[in-house]
Image 1 (cartoon, one colour):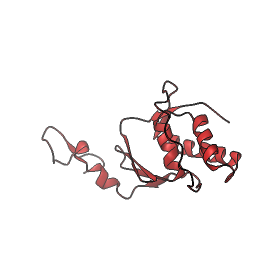
Image 2: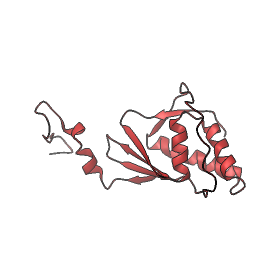
Image 3: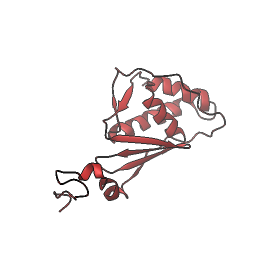
Image 4: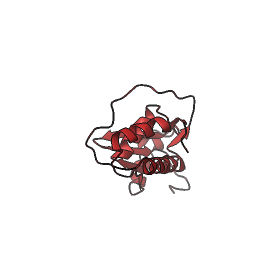
Length: 149
């Protein structure tokens, strides 16, 4: 199914940064972080720039066909977007418009199946961030609760 849906970040608690050919995304509420290497990084960038899935698909076709088939590209793109939705990193928002025409995907880069790698090993450390632990006593005061006795 080719669709023209556009997406935006799920909410303000999703932060991302690019490091070379990898996007790292953190959910500040859950402490879970994600890695999106290679092609996945390009797709993530396009989503944040307001590209529709159909426009992203065209970028991928121009960059990677005949290295891989159009049907394979489309199926893997759809799977990746569904994974982003399932992890509540993005949400559909057809009021989003494309911000700019960015450079094409770099030539010569090998195609890799877009993957969302999920990490929970730093969850406790990420949730110790002062933003989460401030109360009327100020910081650094550990807030007690069901998860933090």
